[in-house]
View 1 (cartoon, rainbow, N blue to C red):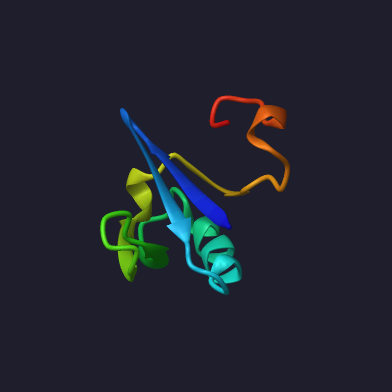
View 2 (cartoon, helix red, strand yellow; view 1 turned 120 degrees about the horizontal axis):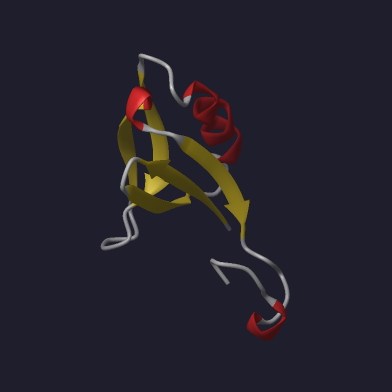
Length: 81
């Protein structure tokens, strides 16, 4: 399971990436800071359904794809553990 973290001026969002969509999301986040819009395939946390997130890339300061560690929760460390 992987997530995309999006950071802007005063905001942060974390979205789960559907299985099989990680490469598409990784290619899209290379647009961070550009004057275009993009689409990310993510999972709606309320319904657990796949949705398309529209992004104004010039409003995003940084983005990263992170994977879920395979070990037990006790072995996790860092801000998002």
